[in-house]
Structure formats: structure tokens, C-alpha cells
Amino acid sequence: MLKGPKTSEKDVLRAVTTYLEGRNITYIRNARFKPVLTKGGRICAGPIKPSQRGISDILIFHKGTVYAVELKSSIGKLSDDQVSWSLRFSGAMGDNGRFLVIKTVEELMVILGSEEEKKALALPSTMRYVSI
Image (tube, rainbow, N blue to C red; front, top):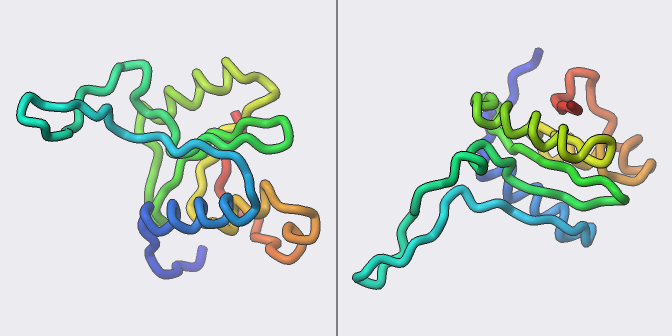
């Protein structure tokens, strides 16, 4: 496997949301924290409920399918909580949902894109996505 430049999860998020906005694809970006207002008027992170641990970064609604997308850096891996959440998501959604691990915007473009985009962006078979 060829090693390319290291990409951060933040870079992948920016590229993915730019692509989704440009294609007018409906999505929700999940916040990783629960905002809590303190007595002093500051907003800080509150506790995350156990059922929400591991929730994917983005939910995409496209052509009758819900995609739970976990964005990772070029070297990122799923945590145990993320694996657990992906299994709960897949069980709840059945054939109408797919859980994806995306490390580049091009991977997502191949999955969601038109046939012309898919041919133009043909990626090697080592492309990382998970359908559970």
C-alpha cells in the first residue's frame, strides 16, 4: 500500500461537508458533546449518554438510504464504542442504512456520486468502507 500525505480528520470533515453542500445532499453533522450552560454563563461540554457513545460523525440521507459516516484521518481506526454503535445502527436500519468509514472525500464521492463521477474517480479495491 502506498503511503500518501497524512490527512487529519478535520481536513476530511471539511472536504466531505463541502462536497455534500455542493451536491445539495441532506446531512446532519453530529456534535461530540452535550452543551451545558454553567451558572457563570459559560458553555461547556456535559456528559454524553451511554447510548450516544460512538455515534458517527455525519448522517447522510441520500436516495432512500441513510449513511452513518465515521470520518477518520489517514491512520485513524474505529474505537470499541464506534464499532458497537455501528452494529446498533445497522440492526435498526436494516437494508435502508449503511455504516461507512471514510478517510478521503473521494471514497464518499464514489459511493454517492453519479455513474460519471464514479468512473472518473475509480479507486483501488483497497477503498475502506464498511457495510454491516
